[in-house]
Image (cartoon, rainbow, N blue to C red; front, side, top):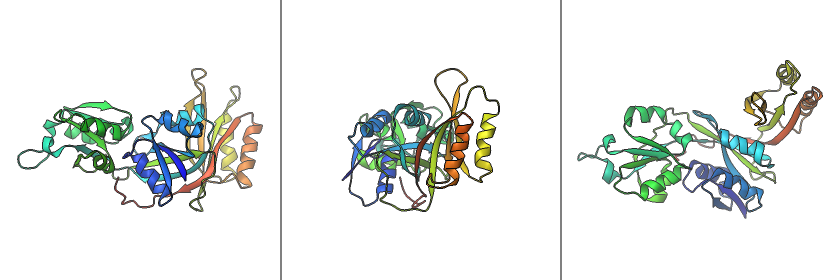
Length: 293
C-alpha cells in the first residue's frame, strides 16, 4: 500500500490527494506543517508528499517552492490541478439571526491558512471588515480551533470536508474572490508515478545564471525559443546567498525524454549556467470542475 504525506485531513491538499489517487489503496499520513510533509518522504516514512505549489489568485506558494528547491532532493513525479473552493465555516446556532440569516456582526474573528485567506480578500473586506484575521497552519487547523472555542464568535475559511470532519456548519458557500480558483499540486517522491496515464508531460528546471554574463537570461530563453519549446511558467527566486542574486525556475511543456529539450539544456549549460532538473513528470488536468471541496 502506498503511503502519502499530506497537510491535515479535510484540507484542500487532502481533497486533492484523494482526487489524484482515486480508488487506489493509500495510507494518508497527515501533518500540520509543510516541513513535516516534505520530511516524511525524505525520511522514508512515506512514498510521496503532496505539495500545493501555485494558486490562481495568490500565485506561487513561496515557502513550499523554497523547500522544494533548497531543503530536499526529491524529484517531482506528477502535477495536477484541483478546484479550490473556500467556504465560511462556523456554528449556525451562533451566527444566524432570529430569521435564520447570517449575521456577520456576530463574527469577531476569522482564521485560515494565509493562502486561503488571500483567496477571499474581497469577501472579507466587504462582509467582515470589523473581524480580526488570524493566520494558522492550515484551513483544517482553523476549523478545529473554531470547534474548540464555542461561543467565541469565531469562524474559519476552509473546505466543506473540513466542516463535516469537525461537525461544524458551512455558513456561506464559495467565498473566494473568483470562480475560477484552482490550486496546482505537485507529487514528490523517489519513484515515478505510474498509476494513471496521460499524454501531457512537463519538465521543471532550476537555472542559475553566471554573474559576469550580461544578457544571459536572453540567451537562455533563446535556446528554448528557436526550438519552439513552450515555457508554461518562469519565476525568479533569491539564491539566499547575497542581495540581488536570483535563480530562475522554469516549467517546460515537454518531457525530458525527447531530442529537443536535452539539447536546449546542453546549450544553456554551455553558456556557463547551472541547470538542475527538478523533475520530468506527467501533468493531469482537472478531473471535474464541479468537485466540491
